[in-house]
Structure formats: structure tokens, C-alpha cells
Image (cartoon, rainbow, N blue to C red; front, top):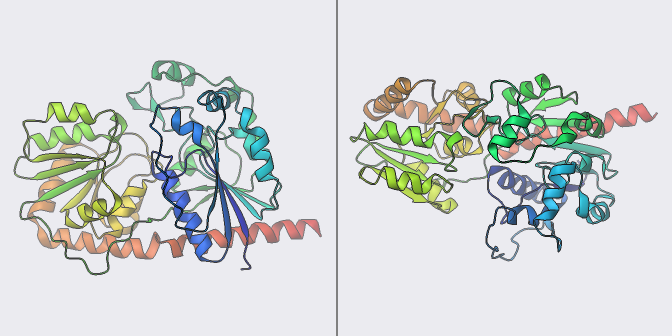
Length: 407
């Protein structure tokens, strides 16, 4: 494939980010530049500051990616205007100047506060793609987490927004989403679950299932060794939908095993207070990527107790890339990697979780077999090479289809 010019459109991008979607965008962009393509990224710096985050110390760029960080004198009002109107608002002129450049591919990611659905109509690239990192197209709360306390069972969006402290978006009831999606050639869904939820939600744009890939790189030869005591690990945001409170409660009753919890979020102080008497439960707060890699390599297993219907958690793939077996709750697309590779255990109830933990700790041969399947499964299914081969095939198919239609 000849070198192409890509533009990534996303609300968050490192270091102005909170979750895995921004990490994936950076990973994808770096792989593309390594292949000889040119990549520009545009994101909304004001959206990061909307949550009252402190200024970010930017390090010199370590890649060839051109990054456009949009911000305005209106500050937090800029993304709020986008949230309420579904349009770029004060960012429109800046986005127009960037997206009207002769890109070959415009790839949209989390567009919720960078331009809303209307940003999909901007730019003239021959190929437009959109990755479904969240369920935002069908859920104003992004994550199908209802009333701030449970997985969504049926849509009650305005009531849910009000109870969750998010302003309702009236433009969602005008057909705006599907009108704007007419300008997009394909949606890329990391999981079968997410693809189906969008179809059920009335999204008519073609959807292709294309799992994401892990950017974490474990050393080929590691000195990391399993702990003398069985040691289980959770890495993620400290949010109710992540199930971390329930996980800690389960381990309160399992003092013979160690649990390490790494990450930040609103529940971190709650956990520190409620489990201060549990010496076998460690709370690390935020940790750098190299420490995450070490935790995964030293874990008896990595546990993902997500209650909310996740799209396809990148952190599950990262654990598998480090050769760690995983224990994953059946919720949304969370368990699809386990079903496809056999590299872990899927559970539904607290009793099944305890059984999985106990067997991982006591049956070394079984645990090692799952670890091997996790690593092999990752190498066969969830590497950048596997992802990019399908990614480029899709782009070429769209290009050929449009050429044949023009003839």
C-alpha cells in the first residue's frame, strides 16, 4: 500500500486523557507512522480540563505524529456547547481548517466533546472510519451505566442523565446521529457485543468487528517471578461500574491470598478507608506502564470484575500480552477475548469468582495452561500486526468500491 495521509479525530489524546481509548489512538497512530504513513491527530484540550484536571506537563514528542490540541478562551464552555448541540461550536473553524486538508483517511474515535455527530460531516477524505470505543452513539452516558448505579436494562435516557448529573441532549431525538453517519463509510467495533448493541439501537451504518490491540510490551525474557503467596491483580479506574468494591469485599474473606489494586478514581479513598484493616489488600493508586507490566507478569491471575457492559477492555489484552491468565466477569464485550483464546476464566456470580480464584491459586498446572493460552491467543489475534492487516484491507475495499461506483 502506498503511503497515506491519516487524520485521527478524538476528544482525548495523551497526555490529556483518562482511559484506554486515547492510548489506543496513540498506539494506532504510531504503528501507521512506523509503516511510512503520515498521521495528524486533533483533540480538545478543553474537554480534559472540564473535569477540573490540573495542567499537564508535556514531554517532547517521541514520534512523527502531528498533534493539534484545540482550546479556546471559553475554556470548559467549549465542550459543554458541543455536548448540548451535537456540533463543534466554537471549535468549528479550527476543525474545518484541519479536516479540509487532503487526507486520504479521516478516522473518528471518541467524538463526544470534540465535535459531536456533526463533526462526522466535516472533511473530504475518500475514506471515513469511526471506531466505537464506547456506546456513546446509543447512550448519552457513554457506557450503558444506568442512573449511576447499574447496567442499563432499557433506555430511559433523560431520566438517567438527570439522575447521573449529566445535561440531557435533545438533539438525540432528531435523527441527527444517523443523518451524520451517512458521511461515514464504516464503523469499527472492537467486539461482537458492541456491534450488536449499536444495531439494536438503530444505527444503520455498516459495522465491522475489528478487535483493538495491546500497546503494552512485556520483555521477551523477564526476571519477574510469581509471588510466594498467590497474588491477584486489578488494574483500572476506581468506578462503581468496574466492580472493584465488590472485588475487594470478596478478598476480605480470602486473607490467604494477596490482592493488588492499581488505578485512580472516585472510589480510591473509599477503598483506602474501608479496607485499611486488610493487610493482604494493597492499593497503589496510579502507576506507570512499566509497573503495570511488572504487576501482570507477577500475578497468579489478573481479575476484571466489570459490572458495566464494557466494549472490549484494552487492559484485558494487556494482561494477556504479559502472559497472565485472566478472570473476567461476563459483562458486555469484556469476556470475548477469553472465549476466543481460552486464556482465562469467565464468571457470573460471586461464588464462581471465589472458585476461580481458589483454583488459580491451588492448581499450578491448570493456571500455567491458561497463561500459555492467553499469551498464544494474544499473539494470534490481538497484536498490532493482526489488527493493521485487517485495517488496511478494509480501507482498500472502501477505496475500490468507490472507484468502481465512479466508473
